[in-house]
Image 1: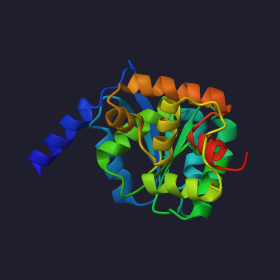
Image 2: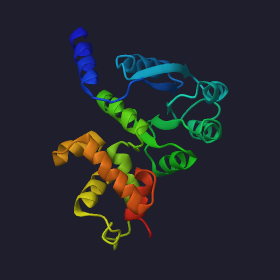
Image 3: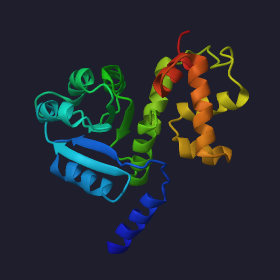
Image 4: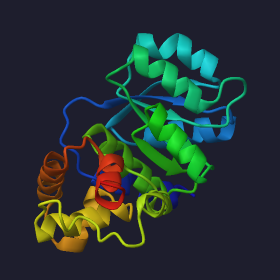
Length: 229
Protein backbone atom coordinates (compact mmCIF):
# COMPACT_ATOMS: atom_id res chain seq x y z
CA UNK A 1 0.00 0.00 0.00
CA UNK A 2 2.83 2.39 0.93
CA UNK A 3 4.65 1.67 -2.31
CA UNK A 4 1.49 2.26 -4.35
CA UNK A 5 0.83 5.58 -2.59
CA UNK A 6 4.42 6.67 -3.24
CA UNK A 7 4.07 5.77 -6.93
CA UNK A 8 0.82 7.74 -7.29
CA UNK A 9 2.31 10.75 -5.49
CA UNK A 10 5.33 10.74 -7.82
CA UNK A 11 3.06 10.49 -10.87
CA UNK A 12 1.00 13.43 -9.64
CA UNK A 13 4.09 15.57 -9.14
CA UNK A 14 5.31 14.64 -12.63
CA UNK A 15 2.21 16.22 -14.23
CA UNK A 16 3.78 19.57 -15.05
CA UNK A 17 1.72 22.67 -14.46
CA UNK A 18 2.89 26.25 -14.84
CA UNK A 19 1.09 28.06 -12.01
CA UNK A 20 2.55 29.84 -9.00
CA UNK A 21 -0.47 29.61 -6.69
CA UNK A 22 -2.45 26.39 -6.20
CA UNK A 23 -5.82 25.91 -7.85
CA UNK A 24 -8.51 26.27 -5.19
CA UNK A 25 -11.31 23.71 -5.08
CA UNK A 26 -14.41 22.71 -3.19
CA UNK A 27 -16.05 19.28 -3.37
CA UNK A 28 -19.80 18.65 -3.17
CA UNK A 29 -20.41 14.94 -2.59
CA UNK A 30 -22.72 13.19 -0.13
CA UNK A 31 -20.81 9.89 0.13
CA UNK A 32 -18.19 10.22 2.85
CA UNK A 33 -15.75 7.71 1.32
CA UNK A 34 -15.84 9.40 -2.09
CA UNK A 35 -15.64 12.95 -0.72
CA UNK A 36 -12.85 12.23 1.76
CA UNK A 37 -10.96 10.00 -0.66
CA UNK A 38 -10.99 12.67 -3.36
CA UNK A 39 -9.94 15.37 -0.88
CA UNK A 40 -7.03 13.26 0.41
CA UNK A 41 -5.96 12.38 -3.11
CA UNK A 42 -5.91 16.01 -4.26
CA UNK A 43 -3.93 16.94 -1.17
CA UNK A 44 -1.04 14.90 -2.63
CA UNK A 45 -0.60 17.53 -5.34
CA UNK A 46 0.94 20.92 -4.51
CA UNK A 47 -1.04 22.39 -7.43
CA UNK A 48 -4.36 22.09 -5.57
CA UNK A 49 -5.84 23.43 -2.37
CA UNK A 50 -9.20 22.08 -1.19
CA UNK A 51 -10.93 24.96 0.60
CA UNK A 52 -13.87 22.95 1.92
CA UNK A 53 -16.15 19.99 1.26
CA UNK A 54 -19.93 19.73 1.46
CA UNK A 55 -22.42 16.88 1.80
CA UNK A 56 -25.35 18.69 0.18
CA UNK A 57 -26.19 21.34 -2.37
CA UNK A 58 -27.81 23.43 0.35
CA UNK A 59 -24.54 23.56 2.32
CA UNK A 60 -22.62 24.42 -0.84
CA UNK A 61 -24.99 27.23 -1.82
CA UNK A 62 -24.38 28.95 1.50
CA UNK A 63 -20.58 28.77 1.38
CA UNK A 64 -19.24 28.64 -2.18
CA UNK A 65 -20.18 32.23 -3.14
CA UNK A 66 -18.10 33.35 -0.15
CA UNK A 67 -15.15 31.03 -0.87
CA UNK A 68 -15.06 31.75 -4.64
CA UNK A 69 -13.01 28.64 -5.52
CA UNK A 70 -11.44 28.22 -8.94
CA UNK A 71 -13.21 24.87 -9.41
CA UNK A 72 -16.14 23.08 -7.83
CA UNK A 73 -16.25 19.28 -8.15
CA UNK A 74 -19.94 18.43 -8.13
CA UNK A 75 -21.86 15.17 -7.79
CA UNK A 76 -25.31 14.98 -9.37
CA UNK A 77 -27.19 12.65 -7.03
CA UNK A 78 -27.29 14.68 -3.81
CA UNK A 79 -29.91 14.63 -1.02
CA UNK A 80 -32.41 17.45 -1.50
CA UNK A 81 -31.39 19.72 -4.38
CA UNK A 82 -29.36 17.85 -7.00
CA UNK A 83 -25.96 18.90 -8.30
CA UNK A 84 -27.23 20.20 -11.64
CA UNK A 85 -29.70 22.55 -9.94
CA UNK A 86 -26.97 23.61 -7.54
CA UNK A 87 -24.67 24.63 -10.40
CA UNK A 88 -27.44 26.65 -12.04
CA UNK A 89 -27.85 28.66 -8.81
CA UNK A 90 -24.11 29.02 -8.16
CA UNK A 91 -23.30 30.29 -11.67
CA UNK A 92 -25.17 33.49 -10.86
CA UNK A 93 -23.12 34.12 -7.70
CA UNK A 94 -19.74 32.64 -8.67
CA UNK A 95 -19.28 33.53 -12.32
CA UNK A 96 -15.50 32.97 -12.31
CA UNK A 97 -15.80 29.46 -10.85
CA UNK A 98 -15.54 26.44 -13.16
CA UNK A 99 -17.70 23.39 -12.49
CA UNK A 100 -16.63 19.78 -12.95
CA UNK A 101 -19.31 17.10 -12.77
CA UNK A 102 -18.04 13.97 -11.02
CA UNK A 103 -20.75 11.36 -11.20
CA UNK A 104 -21.88 7.86 -12.16
CA UNK A 105 -24.48 9.19 -14.58
CA UNK A 106 -23.59 8.89 -18.26
CA UNK A 107 -26.98 9.05 -19.97
CA UNK A 108 -27.48 11.78 -22.55
CA UNK A 109 -30.15 13.64 -20.58
CA UNK A 110 -27.99 14.15 -17.48
CA UNK A 111 -24.95 15.16 -19.55
CA UNK A 112 -26.84 17.82 -21.49
CA UNK A 113 -28.63 19.11 -18.38
CA UNK A 114 -25.31 19.53 -16.59
CA UNK A 115 -23.65 21.34 -19.50
CA UNK A 116 -26.68 23.57 -19.97
CA UNK A 117 -26.65 24.45 -16.26
CA UNK A 118 -23.06 25.65 -16.50
CA UNK A 119 -20.71 22.68 -16.08
CA UNK A 120 -17.59 22.85 -18.26
CA UNK A 121 -16.25 19.38 -17.50
CA UNK A 122 -17.85 15.97 -17.01
CA UNK A 123 -15.98 13.03 -15.48
CA UNK A 124 -17.30 9.65 -14.45
CA UNK A 125 -16.36 8.34 -11.03
CA UNK A 126 -14.43 5.45 -12.56
CA UNK A 127 -11.96 7.94 -14.08
CA UNK A 128 -8.33 7.15 -13.25
CA UNK A 129 -6.69 9.19 -10.52
CA UNK A 130 -3.99 10.73 -12.70
CA UNK A 131 -6.57 11.64 -15.35
CA UNK A 132 -8.60 13.46 -12.67
CA UNK A 133 -5.55 15.61 -11.90
CA UNK A 134 -4.91 16.33 -15.59
CA UNK A 135 -8.59 17.07 -16.23
CA UNK A 136 -8.83 19.57 -13.38
CA UNK A 137 -5.77 21.41 -14.65
CA UNK A 138 -7.15 21.43 -18.18
CA UNK A 139 -10.48 22.78 -16.90
CA UNK A 140 -8.69 25.59 -15.05
CA UNK A 141 -6.79 26.49 -18.23
CA UNK A 142 -10.01 26.91 -20.20
CA UNK A 143 -10.56 23.39 -21.50
CA UNK A 144 -13.66 21.20 -21.22
CA UNK A 145 -12.36 17.79 -20.19
CA UNK A 146 -14.74 14.84 -20.36
CA UNK A 147 -14.56 11.10 -20.00
CA UNK A 148 -14.07 9.66 -23.48
CA UNK A 149 -17.43 7.88 -23.65
CA UNK A 150 -19.19 11.12 -22.64
CA UNK A 151 -17.50 12.95 -25.50
CA UNK A 152 -18.58 10.20 -27.89
CA UNK A 153 -22.15 10.54 -26.68
CA UNK A 154 -22.03 14.25 -27.52
CA UNK A 155 -20.76 13.51 -31.01
CA UNK A 156 -23.43 10.84 -31.53
CA UNK A 157 -26.13 13.24 -30.41
CA UNK A 158 -24.98 16.08 -32.65
CA UNK A 159 -23.87 14.12 -35.67
CA UNK A 160 -26.01 13.75 -38.79
CA UNK A 161 -25.48 10.63 -40.87
CA UNK A 162 -24.78 12.65 -43.98
CA UNK A 163 -22.59 15.23 -42.29
CA UNK A 164 -18.86 15.30 -42.99
CA UNK A 165 -17.54 17.20 -39.97
CA UNK A 166 -15.63 20.47 -40.25
CA UNK A 167 -14.85 20.33 -43.98
CA UNK A 168 -16.52 23.67 -44.61
CA UNK A 169 -15.34 25.46 -41.49
CA UNK A 170 -11.96 26.79 -42.69
CA UNK A 171 -9.91 24.65 -40.33
CA UNK A 172 -6.46 23.45 -41.29
CA UNK A 173 -5.75 19.72 -41.57
CA UNK A 174 -3.95 19.78 -38.22
CA UNK A 175 -6.83 21.68 -36.59
CA UNK A 176 -9.29 19.15 -38.00
CA UNK A 177 -7.11 16.37 -36.62
CA UNK A 178 -7.03 17.94 -33.17
CA UNK A 179 -10.78 18.53 -33.25
CA UNK A 180 -11.29 14.82 -33.91
CA UNK A 181 -9.20 14.04 -30.84
CA UNK A 182 -11.27 16.50 -28.80
CA UNK A 183 -14.41 14.74 -29.97
CA UNK A 184 -12.97 11.45 -28.71
CA UNK A 185 -12.53 12.98 -25.27
CA UNK A 186 -8.73 13.13 -25.21
CA UNK A 187 -7.02 15.53 -22.83
CA UNK A 188 -4.54 18.12 -24.10
CA UNK A 189 -1.61 16.01 -22.88
CA UNK A 190 -2.96 12.90 -24.61
CA UNK A 191 -3.40 14.82 -27.87
CA UNK A 192 0.16 16.11 -27.55
CA UNK A 193 1.43 12.55 -27.08
CA UNK A 194 -0.54 11.32 -30.11
CA UNK A 195 0.87 14.05 -32.35
CA UNK A 196 4.36 14.22 -30.80
CA UNK A 197 4.02 17.95 -30.07
CA UNK A 198 4.00 19.97 -26.86
CA UNK A 199 0.92 20.57 -24.74
CA UNK A 200 1.42 24.31 -25.31
CA UNK A 201 1.24 23.80 -29.08
CA UNK A 202 -1.97 21.80 -28.66
CA UNK A 203 -3.42 24.61 -26.59
CA UNK A 204 -2.52 27.16 -29.31
CA UNK A 205 -4.20 25.05 -31.99
CA UNK A 206 -7.33 24.66 -29.86
CA UNK A 207 -7.45 28.40 -29.24
CA UNK A 208 -7.39 28.94 -33.01
CA UNK A 209 -10.09 26.30 -33.51
CA UNK A 210 -12.34 28.06 -31.01
CA UNK A 211 -11.69 31.41 -32.71
CA UNK A 212 -12.50 30.07 -36.18
CA UNK A 213 -15.65 28.28 -35.00
CA UNK A 214 -16.67 31.23 -32.81
CA UNK A 215 -17.08 28.99 -29.75
CA UNK A 216 -15.83 29.03 -26.17
CA UNK A 217 -15.24 25.39 -25.26
CA UNK A 218 -15.02 21.77 -26.37
CA UNK A 219 -18.76 21.13 -26.16
CA UNK A 220 -19.61 24.08 -28.40
CA UNK A 221 -16.83 23.10 -30.83
CA UNK A 222 -18.19 19.54 -31.13
CA UNK A 223 -21.69 20.91 -31.60
CA UNK A 224 -20.56 23.37 -34.29
CA UNK A 225 -18.43 20.81 -36.14
CA UNK A 226 -20.71 17.78 -35.96
CA UNK A 227 -24.14 19.25 -35.43
CA UNK A 228 -26.52 21.26 -37.52
CA UNK A 229 -24.89 24.41 -38.91
